[in-house]
Image (tube, rainbow, N blue to C red; front, side, top):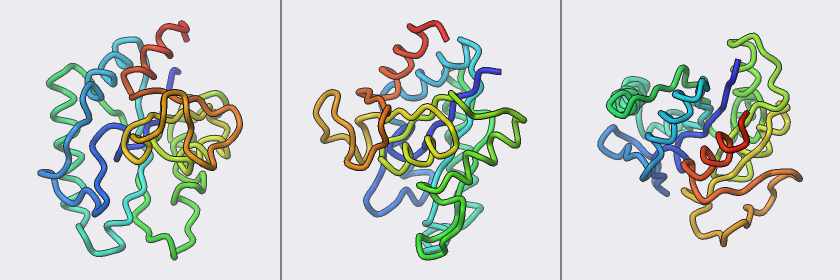
Length: 183
């Protein structure tokens, strides 16, 4: 099974300093939905691993989070793409849970759900904590220079990225690289 794990905010959709709190604020990054569709067309299953502490902070509720994901699924369908599963951490940083990135809990749950070893599974996010969590779960870490990393120079990585992490301009550039290597 070809599986890829993507972060949500800053990787698939625009990120906000005040959190994405509603379907109206959930806006896809240019080319991201089409990139996911290309992954699907190349035989990849896509799962999302996302910190969503806005729930614990009282900024939105589960119904609103589900509506955001419904919008994502609907917009993906219009370009021929899909996300197979969304895993999220609803906890605040102070909760010290095992699922909030940079902890690898979300990734491990994805591996359990699919019944696969995550070694070598590509994982893409826009922060060092995404890459740290991915590597801790055995995934191959990648960072896109969108979202929280949008101001990085070409080829640069966010401070704190683990060794071996690769940098890409955006999700479409990552997909170009992945599909280009024939995996």
